[in-house]
Amino acid sequence: MQAIQNQITPGTRVFDLGLALEMARARGYDLDIMSELLPEAQAGMLEATIDSQPE
Image (cartoon, rainbow, N blue to C red):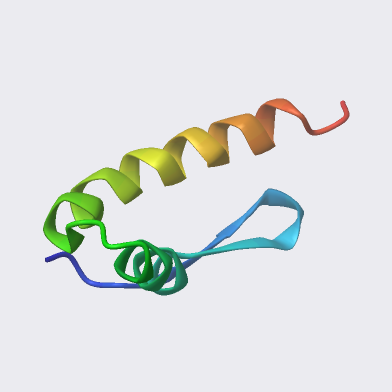
């Protein structure tokens, strides 16, 4: 499993990977699989956040 860390995105939004894994565990998802998918989800959310920033 990858190290759990918080990531700060533009606009000081925080993506809490630990919380995301806890939510996945509570819903019965496989944490090994989720720990592999979450960084990709985070990258997509970061890209969407950057793209939505006003110029």
